[in-house]
Image (cartoon, rainbow, N blue to C red):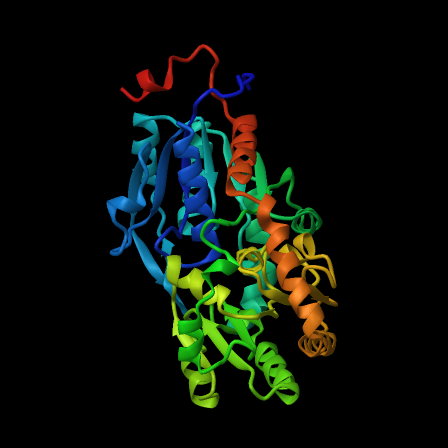
Amino acid sequence: MARIVQGQLMIITIVTETYWPDVNGVAMTLRRLVTGLATSGHYIQLVCPGHRERSVTDIPDNVYYQPVKGLPVPAYSDANMGLPAPRQLNRLWRSMRPDVVYVATEGPLGWSAVQEAGKLGIPLVSGFHTNFHTYSRHYRIGFMEKAIARYLVTLHNKTQATIVPTLEQKLMLEKMGVRDVAVMGRGVDIGQFSSSKRSAVLRARWGVQDDEPVMLYVGRIAEEKNLSLTVRTYYALREFNARLKFVLIGNGPLVDKLRKEHPDFIFTGKLTGDSLAEHYASGDIFVFTSVTETFGNVILEAMASGLAIVAYDYAAARTHIRPGVNGVLASYDDAEDFVTRARRLLQNESLLKDIRGNAEQEVQRHSWQSVVMKFEEILRSHSDQDLEACAIGDRLG
């Protein structure tokens, strides 16, 4: 592999089953990475399933968008599963060979990209964004968990490196048998998410006064997010403060069931942009009971918005929360401890206020720019770009 001159521009292919305007952590992260790399001057080939709501304004300059066929993911209508696209990938890479391919997702499209790049001898880096093997427990296919885990290990070991968001995730994958795992954190847009976006008008629509608390949930409303404990926590807090409101932001298969069983809950549906930021900042407590995340971007967004977070001690929460200072951590997968710690937080108004202020301060140094630079560094270290190759402008014709 040729040594790479720092700052030399690359042609990078990013293959993913999900991308903006899909609303999930993977799609959001990839949009930030693509935009950041393109802004730095790199040329990006973005390969992903087409989306009827995706417009040219979603695709930055320096990005060639290659849509492929996809199908809706069962029980996950907000996302597509990319179908294998070996011929399209072969044509694309023979006409303009990339310096490195990043395979972000492990579905049929991702597998075909790994296979085709391998045939052409193009360096590969993969990302582990979702615990698909553990998700299987929540969709009545738990018996396939070990088989899915074996598939994931096989796919990732066909690449030169696998990127994960936390050291905890790195250790887990290494235990599973994945080799060459690199850690790259996540960032947050502090220009978008801020306590300054708090809206008295929005809170009035929810039926709360300035001194009345709002518990917030943001994410997919589905079994794998452990929402039964979220609901239990809410009612435990209501025993202390009957004025507490619960606002859920997002879509998912449990929406209709929860709406029917809990008419007092406030459902906003899917939100993005300024509306999402305003809703975040207008809450007070962010309860995140999931135990299936690889990271959990919502943790950073909630902290930037000045919310007091109660979460399990793992993933993004373990990385960024100092217990009792800028958030509250419960022992991993201990429901009783989670409810107890959430109740204590709500009962201590002084602590609640301090945590909210400290949380917003904590994330000020976690910019997406630093994450993009780390991503570029990892890709560059595995690129086969030749020092003697002509300038990228000549290569692009």
